[in-house]
Length: 181
Image 1 (tube, rainbow, N blue to C red):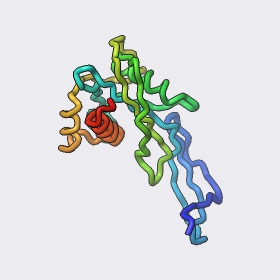
Image 2 (image 1 turned 90 degrees about the vertical axis):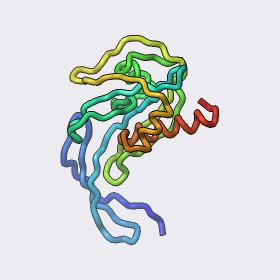
Image 3 (image 1 turned 135 degrees about the vertical axis):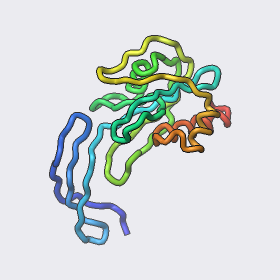
Image 4 (image 1 turned 45 degrees about the vertical axis):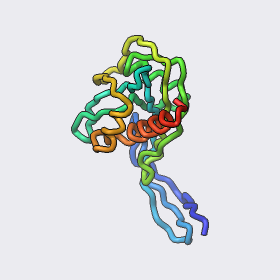
């Protein structure tokens, strides 16, 4: 059996600055009908900026949906049509005040596959140079550096819960162990 679901119709429910919501009538692989509620999102980037001392830059930022401050790697939303690599460099400079000599693609993550189209592009950055922070209007965060090994421990203890950050920390650590980074 083919696992494809065919879209029969789409109805836009909400269009905002960050995402659009639509409800689709679909045909399932067995021919029966159902619906899907979808959040369309332009995607994002996440960057692990690695120092010569095996530390990574992190940001602490209040995340309104959770009502708390989360510890995350620098990240941001892609503008429509924006190149993910360039967006990653931009976010690193804006949030942490750092530029990188080398930026290495680390794959992608699909953070909410059941209902959201968001794809987050992951990068590792090395050869860092300090510049100045340039936060977006209304963006408030604090920056800190954490050793890679300590960050892995924090993931395993549940102290870091953000999905993109968890994935990228573990990928960076694995490649560091293999001598690739």
